[in-house]
Length: 313
Image 1 (cartoon, one colour):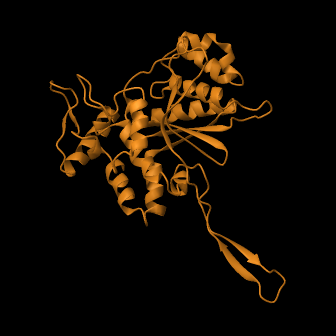
Image 2: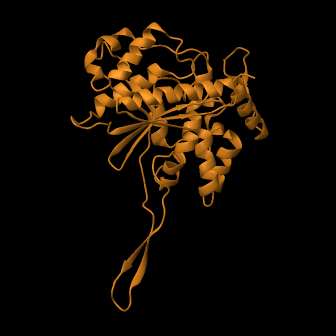
Image 3: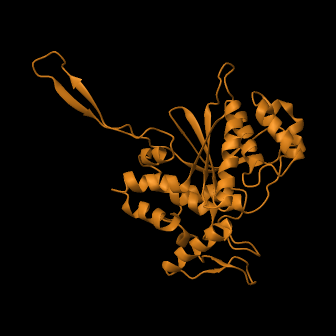
């Protein structure tokens, strides 16, 4: 079975186990029964007003039906739904378990301080782990260039936030890597050399891809490069700094078989090129993140972790 169909059938099975009625995503026409009638049925908790507003401002039809298609977030295989289901739960809370599961921070551990050393009554004081209450932004857009006519579309990141003075941007993938070929960058990006300061190797890769579109079959390299250009424009690197002051995390849904192996190999190939330009590019899978949460942070988060595990593992 092809990877995309495997993911879709797995999500359809989850919906049927929950007792949901599946419908076609095509309005007025027959189609694959892979959509839910309500967005809320596809989510662990309903969208907050702030998050819903972000998606309504986004590029396209995540929450609203159009004349021919249901809202994208109604699809059981929705890439935006899996993002919301993982991240929204932590808004306004200590998100250190999630940041650890994403391999962005070391595991938070208690520490101890000895007071009154040398006295007859030294005291051991427990220091609780540091908390990370972060503000997640969904569908965050970053302009790549001031010339909006030549560069009308900004880089659109699935999730962004800041902690410890470092900007974190996350690109999430569900079925997309297994859905066919991806576009290369438009010529206007290659012609504007001012975009590529301190990114010589990614620039060479972009030029190479414009000539050979078959080198990367699963990884949308053009999109990742565009994200990096947008982040560079908004968080410029200091003159002597060797690495970027942002991290770009690629979060994807892994599959077994040749497609999964090929996708991972392409990710690692791109990561090496990005690293050679000082870009702090990281990657991990949804399965790795959810497994860490289940193994180490299920207590106190049982409903959330069990939902993710049942649905996505």
